[in-house]
Length: 186
Image (cartoon, rainbow, N blue to C red; front, side, top):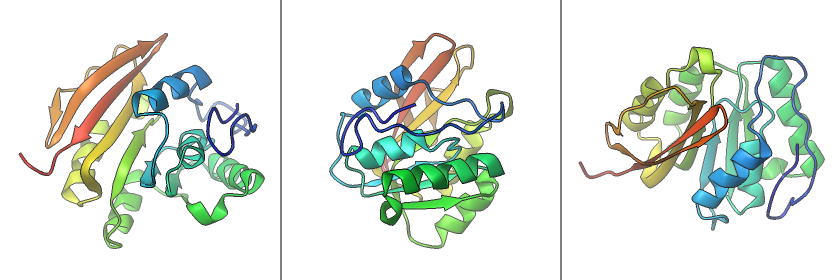
């Protein structure tokens, strides 16, 4: 695996060993970030089921000011920390090892808002609508924030989840990417 563009372009990162995680393919990550505009001028990125941390590290490489990573797997947590150390971007990152809902509750007390959220839980254990609702209920999204959901191509998600409105879907092999934008106005 490698970082595709930006400050850390072409730098290699590691994926966790074993089958607990399913890294986003480079071609899918490249398509997602191109759809988001390619490069960023600051902003916060949440990689809630981070695996290797590739999505959040790509966001930092492309100009996001900070990425927050989380994974329940200890192996993934250690891999993310190692990848951050390898790239030397520790000051722009925070890494957590806890349940998704516990992290969101923890972050809600710090007046943090994200401009970008990537949701890529194990396909069999997805509860993306619940998480999308929590992000809104806990005021963790900036106005115009983008929430990207990676799922199996067969999975169906509603056009609207609260004030998150789907504006695009794309299929890459067995993977579907659903793009949502958040609006503070109903």
